[in-house]
Each structure stands twice: as structure tokens, then as C-alpha cells.
Length: 423
Image 1 (cartoon, rainbow, N blue to C red):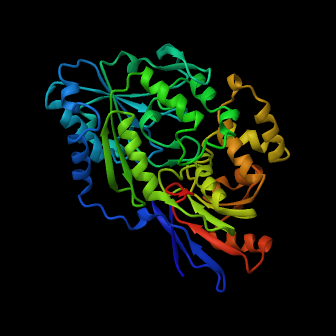
Image 2: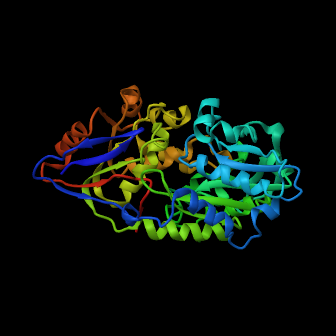
Image 3: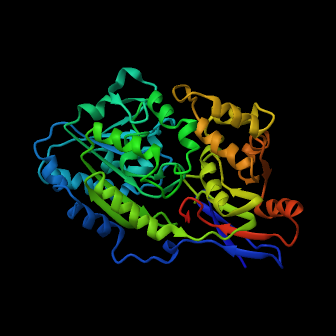
């Protein structure tokens, strides 16, 4: 059995040791074949908005249109979606030059090269581009108190817009339920203070703060409230397959359209667990496997199907390094994950430090499982210092795992760890 795992912009192929009990966990989306081309799927969605007037009608006579879009860490197919959005706006507003607001959240800003790769010159010539900077308090506006009790501050460019729209993509999200929709506001263009409160340890430890869960998810509740306060008027969200191709799209009312998109993704990615002694997962390749920080997402999927005390093998290129120094120190500076977790749970909601949420989830996994990371050698020392173990190849990682769990250990492989909801 030869197995292919997405890795950076290519893949890794490996053959499990002979005699192993190996199962491959893939969602129904693996075999989903859309009826139309990627472009036509998007055009059909934007021409048939859900619970909303057409975008062209909303854009008529607007002087200050702001389009929120994802940063370099998200595989949104903007070369397909953005030209169609601009085309729709210019049907009734031919001289419009919208502002493209890059929703970086707490990530670094996107570089000119990354923006060019994402959008292309033709789109960039038609818009003004601004990277959101969550620490730039002079460019934040206060919009009230979130249901959780935190203050809502967001980018003033969005508040001053006379039409605020966003593009994004919907996939399972390991603590927000799903990506897309309201997430473009919080954490996308929110202040550092607001994001930190929303990502507090109490919320992260809530059993409903998990992939596929919205209704009872406290993090989602804050995000919806933030999007309403920001007056987000229209969204275009897509669903993509393992090849990063558009297979579905929704447009229109930010809440009704997002809900329908989430239902589609839930039906297409939900699958039963295949419990195993060793679980191999990925982050679906580039761009989400650029750093160790993001790799935690694929680990959470493995966690949902791993037997107690299993070994999780995380295959993620991490060529961009750690992804967060605070994330590193919150684990590496403590003798054990338990001591990190004890500190996280004592931290008041309004004092949440940067990256604690990611560190908290990783600590939770490490308290239950051994984690071996297959990645670029540049992160080897960081991985080891964060209470995980580095392996250069998948074969080496399996050998290490079998030394712990035995040669007859069962193995479950999840080729796309961020594209699956384990029921």
C-alpha cells in the first residue's frame, strides 16, 4: 500500500511496514465531483445570493467599499473569486476602487510577493491593499462589549466603509467550528486585545469549542456578534477539495449563507473515527503547513480518532519556522505540558497572552499522546524542546512509534487532517 500525504507544495509518498494493520481515513469529499467548473460554481453563487440583494445592487453609488480577504496562511482561491467580486461591483459602480483589507488576525502581514501570488496583477491594479495590523490601536474603533464580556475593537477601515463585504473559505476549524463567514471580522480584522479575550482558556476548554460545532460554541457566538456590529453586509465563501479546487460556493447574507455553506461542508467532511494505536495526520499541505503553530490543527483531528495513549505522527513541512515565539516558550520553558496547562487555566480571560490558545490545545494533546513531527530539519530543535519528538521521514516516525506501541500496532492515516470532521 503506497500512501500519498500532502506536504508543502507537493506530497510525500511512503509504504507502511508489511504486516501492519493500516486504515486510511478520508471524508466523502474525496470522491465528490462538482457539476460545474470552479469559475462557474462561484458565478452561480454570486448570481443567486442567499437572503440578500445582489452584490451589484448593494454596491450601487457606494463610495467606500471594503473587501476583507484572507492572508497568506489560507488557501482561498482568490484568483478565481476576486475578479468575479470586482466584476459584480462594477456592473453598477464602474469607477469603484475598493480597498482590499487583508485579515491577518494576529499573524504577520502578507508580503507583496504573497499578495501577488494570491491575487495577480490585474486584481491588484483595481484595488487599494491594506494589511490589518492588530496592534495598531490608532486604527481601531470600539464597537461595544462582546457576549463573553470582552471589548470589541476592529479596524476602522471596516467601520468607515459604506459597504463591507468579505470573501473566504469554509472548512472545519478546530475550535471555532468552521472557518469563513463571521471569522473575517473576529479574529480577522479585530484588535489584539479583542482576539486575546475571544481565545481565552475557558472558551478553549469548552467541549463545544471544536470542529463542526457552532450552535453551542461560545467562540462562534462572539464572532457572530462582532460581524453584526461591524455591519458585514455580504460574503462569498467557497468550499475546496484536497487539491485546493473550488467544489461549492455560497454568497449573500453573512449568516444565512455561511450557515448553508457549513452544512454542505459538514455533510461532505464528516466521517466516523477509526481508532488506532498510531495516527498519522497532515495539515493538507501548503499554505497551512508552513509552520509548527498551524500544525496543531491537523493534530486535533488525529486526537479525535486516537486510542488512549496513542502516538500521533504529524506530517507538516513547517518551512516558515515556528509561527510564534510565544507559542514556543509557553511549552518549551516548562518542564512538562501539565505545568503549562496549569498556568493556562489560571490565566484570567482578560489577561490571555498571545498564542496561549494554540499552546493550550497542543498541551491538551501532549497530556494524552506522544507526538512525533515530520517536518523540515530547521524546526527539529524547536519540536524536541516543546515536548514532542522530531523525525526526518515518515518511515523514521513510524519506526519510533512502533518502538512505543509495538510492531502489531494499528495505524490510521488521515491524508488531510484539516479537511475532516471526526464524528
